[in-house]
Image (cartoon, rainbow, N blue to C red; front, side, top):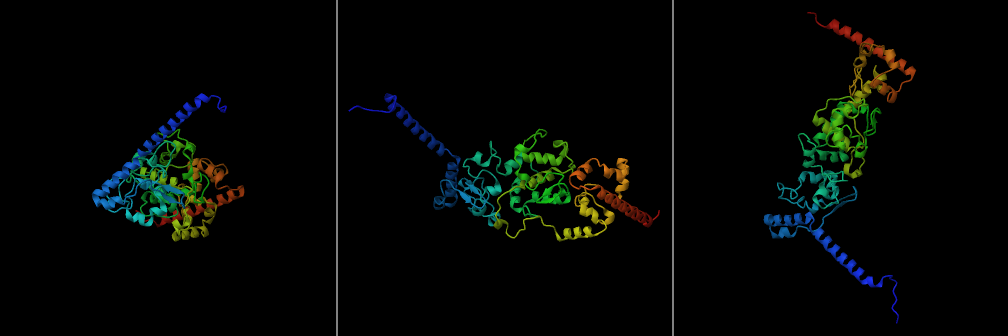
Amino acid sequence: MERRTNSPYPRLDRPVLAIVGLLLVLSTVLFTRGDREHEWRYYQWDFKRVVGEKLGAAKAHSVPTGLQQIWVPALGHADRCTTCHQAVQWAGFESAEEPFRTHPKEILRSHPVETFGCTSCHGGQGWAVDVDPAHGPVEHWEEPVLGQSLGDTYSIVDNKRALMQMNCNVCHRYDRETKGADFINLAKQLVQEKGCRACHTINGRGGTIGPDLTYAGDKAPEQYDFSRLNGQKTAYAWHVAHLKEPKALSPDTVMPNFNFSTKEAQALAMLIMSWRRSPVPAQFVAGVPRTDRQTPEEIAAEQRMKTGPGAWFVSTGCFVCHSIKVFGVTSPAQIGPDLSNAVEDVQSRFGRTIDDFLASPTGTMSVVLSRQIILTPQQKQIAIGKLREAFAEYQKQKAAATKAAPSH
């Protein structure tokens, strides 16, 4: 019978198949060897040894082997951290070196691993099973573990582990104060004291002069201009430098220099980076309104100013930056001069009448009156009248104070 074949080179079939077979065997051997060299295998072996020495063979036998994974559907997280960090929920390893250290029990009681996973708090790449890819920073991975090592890199003051508070605030962003988050608490206090909402919208409330910061943490590093930034080219480093000296990074900005300390700038940068979209299930923050709440004192003060003689300045938003103390109006930001004597102040500072200045403002006010507080010509005339009323009251109170002062 005639032998038939579809191969154009029948004599080469067997050698080619033999070579392909050898390559498959070789790749299998290399894969197996590479898999055996994963660092997690060594850590599991070593932890089992340590448990055996410390707690006995029976306990050592109960140590799980192989890849360990925590799947948190509510957050979309799959964490394999416990593959190496096996002592997380073991008692007796509280003072051990990582990765064999017991996690503080108080935190786990309110943040159980089964519900929150690991990376939702600590950062890092949950899928990874080797040290460098899991902890970072590595190329194309922008979520390194927010621990002491990164704190050293950024020269965080006082608390090298404070960067992790960025992740805490993803869930706790509407808390006025969060236990254990000293940097975030400081930053939230500064946002209130410095009146950041005068220019920025935060959580749906605020001004429009500056960018909306509600989800500023979602901004990709590629969107930042690092050309004027010295040192590390990261979003966090950019925010710290910008908060310390705004015009150094953004020459055209109207943001004032608040002379923040290093800790204050670092804290505010953490807060800004924490403001990002993230799937936080309602049960994680049960009973917490998803809005920035005002205290009863703040609400009462605002209502008092809205109905008093300075109500016009409140309704237009002028009070966000400026106080008008003669009318009992106090700005939450106080970054602009008191308007009680604006009639006199504008004349002395700019050599112009208040009428002329409002008709053609300069500097920061030109930006404010063109982008945030837009007044019609008629409203500008009302503003001039209100400012003259305030100045008249200012002169009256000044004269009364001078008369009441004891003579020497």
